[in-house]
Amino acid sequence: MAEITAAMVKELRESTGAGMMDCKKALVETDGNMELAVDKLRESGLGKAAKKAGNVAAEGLITIVVNADNTKATMTEINSQTDFVAKNDGFINLTQEVTAHVQATGASSTEELMTTTINGVVFEEYMNSKIATIGENLVARKMATVSTTGGVVNGYVHTNGRVGVIVSAVCAPEAKEKTVALLKSIAMHASAMKPTVLSYTELDSEFVEKELLAIRAEVEKENEEFARLKKPLKRIPEFVSKSQLTPAIMAEVEANLKEALKASGKPEKIWDNILPGQIERFITDNTPLDQRFALLSQAYVMDDKKTVEQAIADTDPSIKLVDYIRFELGEGIEKQVTDFASEVAAQLG
Image 1 (tube, one colour):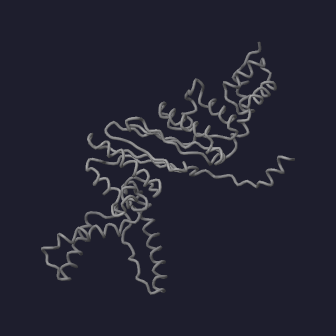
Image 2 (cartoon, rainbow, N blue to C red):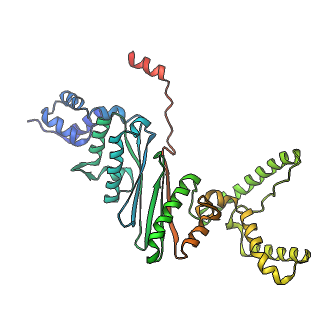
Image 3 (spheres, rainbow, N blue to C red):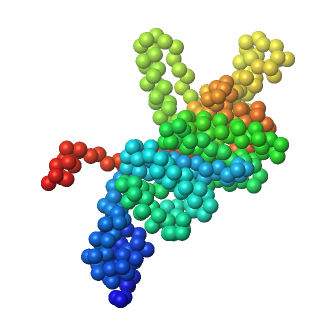
């Protein structure tokens, strides 16, 4: 019996793309004969993984698994090469199994996941066998798990499986049931409205300043067209985020509003009824960036007269969002553009 060395396993793995354990088994069964081992892997379909592993996998599914008491949710993006495979029951079952496995193991990256054991085999071997069976390159690309001890977590995957959101919150014990339902609705909102952060406080100050210049330029350009059409002009914003509205600025705004009320002849005794609405309007007009990118500042799609933050407060004052994660399928992947005629010609040649 020939000695099967690590170098031999490595060489076979690099030439076939099959998993390490499969390579070692093939070498043992062929008494170390590299050519026969390659043939054996190809005959079993495992050698196909090598060629397919180089193919761009930009389709697939976003999958979410939430545990029974809504204290832990895991979301994965698992990619295939084609949308056809993504709709296959075998692939759908794979995504559910892998997502549950990610939750059970706590894996937070593809590299970490590859070293875990699933169904008695190393995860990398498991994926290679699925690649061979399904016939396309498959990649467990992204994963995230959110857990909580003092609240609840929930998620939503859009019907096409291309967008998924997890949201978590702390709340009073008696508010958990309604918080679970609310988080599902907020996750649905976020899937459509694409916020990038939970709160405006997470927006980078340099980004805010750059966007202020850009938004002002946009409004000025729109106003040129409005002026030509003799339509009312849009107000050019002084600010774009609540992060810019310092206490000193808000004090000045309130003083100016009071002066305007005085000049208009409004009795001072009713100012307290008018000012809150005017201040709120000023904040709304001067925070377009928050409304675009910050979840809590967006108009709630279930009731657009409220922001998401106001909808949360109206549901129960004890609820506070603490985490938000959104996956969009294929985001950041450079898709391969294929000349179908050339591909067929190359295969025939």
